[in-house]
Image (tube, helix red, strand yellow):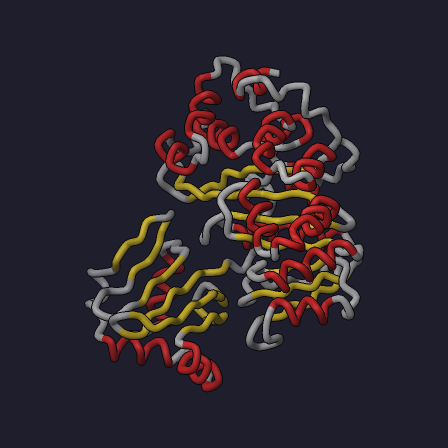
Length: 398
């Protein structure tokens, strides 16, 4: 097994991931579908697979793997098309040592390439607060965040600090100064890195993932003390994200944390990634919640079950329910209806949007950002009572 040759094949075929495991041929994921390379490679024995994987690890990484039975790392190769970087997870499994390689593009995509909505693009202009991106693994959260960090890099003379596991996208400094730290190499964890960050004069902090109570508390504190903090959470919708953060804390602290979160939160974006109807490539659909006064009140008063109403009644403020984003892409023939229904959290709402005879793409939450978009944030206030009793189709018509 020659890993550089395998990775070159994966790059040539536009794969997003490469799977290595004993007793089967390597496999690549292209446009969301996992495709075994049976014609190119025979099944690997346990020893062949382990030798290939151990061959890319440093001695200290081998020691960590032996101790922890798994390790996350970054890996780069000089291929004919240039240097290619990978995020790698190596792990022990039933049949032996396996690994998953995630390809990381050299170039950070532009907002228009990601079909990024304007209300998300505006997060790059915020002076402070907490912005969360949520969704399952492999839905492109890191890529969307990298795009926002790059926009800050191009526009603001500030210090950007990232703490990642491992480092994925790398940045060329433009107007900003950028410090990137990787778990296991530059720091022992998100929590100690965030403690240190508050003494490193950052303006913008990217936390790769909010996994535990201490990391979440430190991210909230950093947001309170005048920093703009971006992070990710593995949840499937906006209300679940708020509840997940609150539920991490002991019951006695939850009321205080609700108040704290309601004060610092600027927005939550839930993202899904689906194959394009054309069969080539994938496209993201996003649910966008902005922290308007009404949303802050719902969080503070533990009424997160009402956040979906805020989404649907806040379209003019730039919010967007996931189902509306999915319906728009179906109407534009970018994705199939079956793909949209598979990703919808509320299939009946999706059907309402698709059934509307006056479907409009002029809703602010669907407007795509352009590179020169720089707008103020004075338009977030809205009256949640004005359309809370309307159906999704009626709200869209309004």
